[in-house]
Image 1: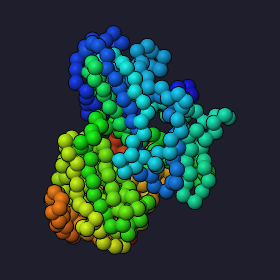
Image 2: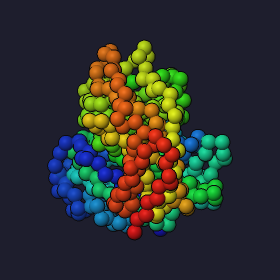
Image 3: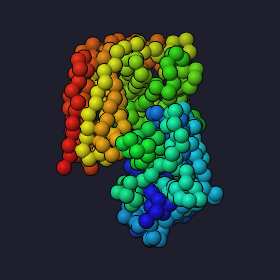
Image 4: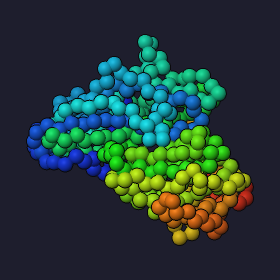
Length: 391
């Protein structure tokens, strides 16, 4: 099975809605009668260590059955003609790439696939990466992923309505280095964000322009899980969009700086959430960082560094790439105390306080095939290499 016909990342999401209800004979998800429209857009979380991450999109497919195969009937498709090569790193800070739309039977869809063009003799760099300081290299897909990552969605398409679907392709977590071979694997990490709204679903703010944009990441998190991540532009401005309605912790991490957290940030669909302006930018203080290294088996596992602040919340501070050949990983975590402030609508001043009780204390979390292992570390001193092994 080729990448063009089988590279599929199926996305878990909490109900993509346009309103409605019907019956459908293709199996799996219920139909509601009539015809609606699915409109697909693409965006990206920031990359780490790459100047370009290119994918060539051929089509997006949806089906009402979560178990439908590539050859089953009942698929609806947004086909890009011609296929479009997109540098994901151009799609940060609220930028969306419109992939198109298609009419389809109204109902509930439970399977969604993003289909990419193959790297072949005619298009050897259809999917590629440009490491910072290096040359363009093809992205390859491990044989274990040729059937795609199959997860359920809940996409409801109403009659005579448009269901907007935003695919958030995390370039940083989707590119995996393969030892010292100079090669890279494409391991797609994509989430779905339901409705696009010109009126809201976004958080705007400002960090100190002195922060290096390439090493600064701003994210909205819930329970230590990033929902949307971006990098600030050259002026320090950041836009997190689109973001589902809810309440979030905003986390700012930057190389050589302490972590900054704003708790209780609201997102609504009727207005922008403005955190601060140019006169009061978020300015994380300079701090020492501590290197943390380790190894995880199998090398397909993921690793991240979490920090639990006094009185909460728990936040994700770093997500190191795991080498696809060796399983090795390395990251750096700040020793200085994290600064925390409760959300206050602009133009109120955010009242940051240092959380000295959690300074330098982290938990490494490894995940593989649904299993999770954790290891507490104290970065106030040297950290011994950490090893995780899954059956």
